[in-house]
Length: 115
Length: 113
Image (tube, rainbow over all chains, first blue to last red):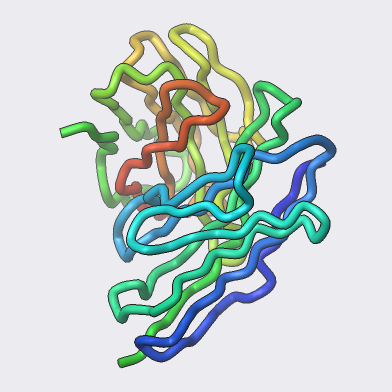
């Protein structure tokens, strides 16, 4: 069965510092991996995805994520955090081989960036 | 503007009173889906639709119905709402189900008393 774990409920960083939001996954085949962000009173917005190829994926708003197959991880990163990055972040996975299955979301990590 | 529109944004109702949450997308997407978001549980899929007249159950379909009579619309129906269906609901769509990211509506916060 597919699953996604976001081990931290909350991540706190100071503005200007690098940030990492962690995600690990479990699928039987190769994964499609996604990161979404949710701002208050809004729906989820797509940030970036990994399908295949380069393990470092660049996305919106200066975010990037690193795919690590041996550690089954897909951590979200940003070199310099902004206060406006404060939001709820979701990692999601789908097994490439299982057509028709849902995108499985993690429980979310709240990122708080202080000025 | 390309968007997924849900209505209403907020809804308070009583147990057993049938309700419908509407969802419409203007991007000609084939795939549409409903999720519920609960604290500590993330997003869980209720139902999805691969195309018109094709719907299927997600992970938590009990107590819900959907229909897909037109490509753009995918309403969520609660025939007899119960308090455990109090949640934040999101409709989402994408061109297909595989590689394409989902486009989400702004959500419907439902309270069942």
